[in-house]
Image 1 (cartoon, helix red, strand yellow):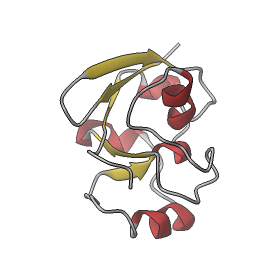
Image 2 (cartoon, helix red, strand yellow):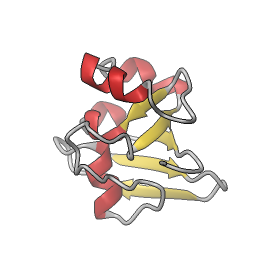
Image 3 (cartoon, rainbow, N blue to C red):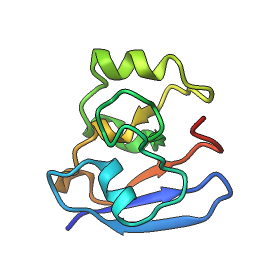
Image 4 (cartoon, one colour):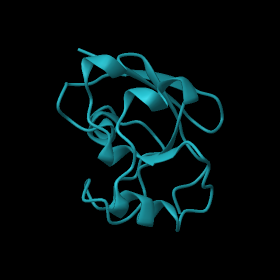
Length: 106
């Protein structure tokens, strides 16, 4: 089972085991990771599962689609490595991926 490393804005690190085929957001919610609100439950319509993907992992995940890109444009702390974690599917290839979380999802 792949592991995803979430780093909260204050530096606290949480490693969670994620079931392949689920979203990174689902793994965070199922493991009570603070900082992932997931208001829309993964339908790419709220932006409250925003995370900063460690640059070393960006090439291992598909790029953001048009709906995700549109949602990202409205976020407060947008960075080049910003992604909605509901749009990233857990695979064996991302075992160990690091996702940093913003100070706020609102």
